[in-house]
Image 1: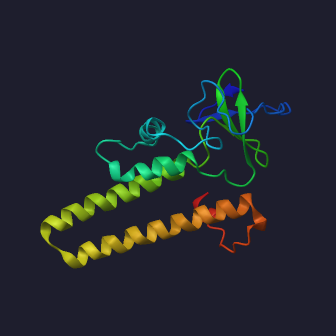
Image 2 (image 1 turned 90 degrees about the vertical axis):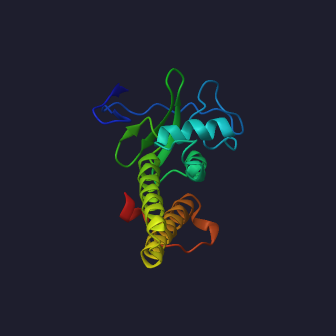
Length: 177
């Protein structure tokens, strides 16, 4: 795989994709750390490192560390699979498009979600100082709407991974892709 032009993407060639070399379930591959999402729950150090990767300051934005933890455990969108390059670590491949990426396909989604929530937080802090209760409640409503949509995205991803789960959630991936 050769480096591509976009951040976090890898250019693909017309060669067939090699069989992925995945570590045994329940065991993280040595030296991978980041994106070993399907193996163990992340510890505090992994969450802090991933928060920084997503643009979250672990000290100043502690209330958003849940986003980093969730991103570390996020399911893959449909048609994406996780693979291990023994020399370079984990990468992701979309069988429908032929696209490969070094970053989890949901990382940009989590960055955008953090930026939106952080912007709402800053707006709420400013309005709180102005004691503008009505405007403050409007920002709260925007935040609730963001989180509701986020929950629908996660439900859609989980349903795509396990269609026999009995869930009947709308496919919100169409709007975020």
